[in-house]
Length: 339
Image (cartoon, rainbow, N blue to C red; front, top):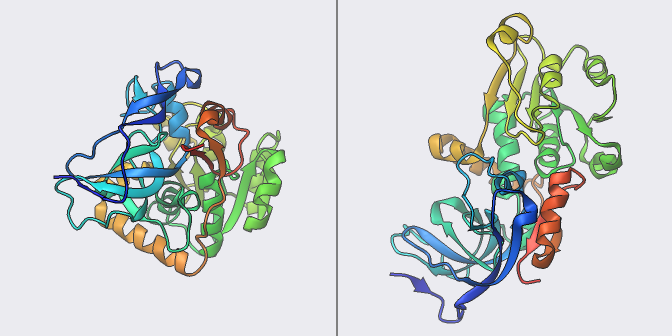
């Protein structure tokens, strides 16, 4: 039985962005009369206050995100908002009216369903928009740095796409744990990361990038956070310390990259591991629970602070996805489905 707030009348139809084909963002369409989703077993119905954009959204528009939805579908998967209904079989449900951040299908709409196990309360005093990134960007950065990357005090870490949501979180986290940071970003984005504490900020397009990274780090980095893929993977392998160096791969914004056994034995003797935060939560739940507890502690000590995303109206949602795809955006992008 679904429990709904008596003070909140849920409309029969809503506005949302629908992906019509797998031809890219141009085939996203604003639809004014979508049927309002109904929470099933183990789900909440959430009135979306703000939806987050992630590069996975770009990949999904082209059908290249493994396990992603197939057209036609309401786009988006990360959002924060108010619980307005509770589906059946939710264990220890949060009260109707609670504000939560989480993931689920159809985030680029006024209402969406979220699996109850995939939500977290919006921190006290934070807006919905400010909490975007908490369960994706910050969780990904923390998982890459600590349980997988094993970053220690005094280590060097290389952060690709340092001006993005995960990149900015990674810089803050690495400095909190006493590491040194080399941050890579386009030159016009350097101001955005200047106050985050990176020890070295380099233009990602410079010709002598590998040589400069080896020089400033005194021989290579202990950890690379690799999210770009095809255009940066050789660099990442080349600047990681032999045998001690780790690559944590959690994205492929420029396309897929590869490394073969010959390279690992004779050229790049480094440790390479993949990260998908959803799979991490599902397959190693105990480690994920520890990660969530650490995120709570980081909020308490002021390392993890409310976000300041650039918020676009739903009517500008297609342009926002294009902006993310182009690599010109700085920080977190969000959509207000009520604008």
